[in-house]
Image (tube, rainbow, N blue to C red; front, side, top):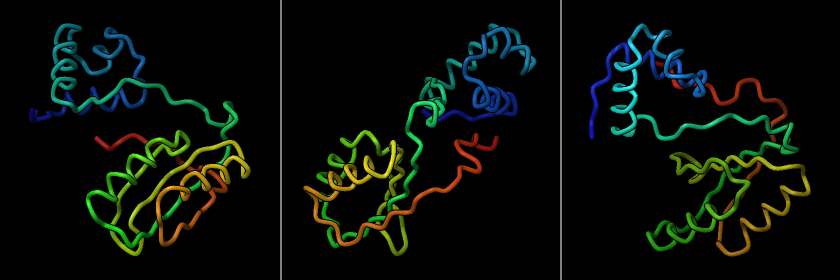
Length: 153
């Protein structure tokens, strides 16, 4: 379903990206709509798939997951069967929080959040144990300057 978004939809989405826990009343006041009109727009945005999930952002350091690793993967294999196995394998690793197929020198990019270097080593071993990969290069984040920024509206 395709939905044409107007400036009010953009305002609703911007507010929800800042705070998805806003009450209907607070959201409708911030965007200048009645609660009913705001609710109808939210339902339309949900139905169209524009809003995929209502979630919270957790503090990874408070949860003991302070190490962020970006992993670049290069492979010689590009068949549909291999890709299906690879996707299934990577998706089963809970520490992998983002997984992209990319263009350029590498084929895949993973974002891994884990406790420490020892736990990353376990993730790495699990990553390479069942699937043949040509190159696995890890980059360790020193500081999160900006993380989980909202999509510009």
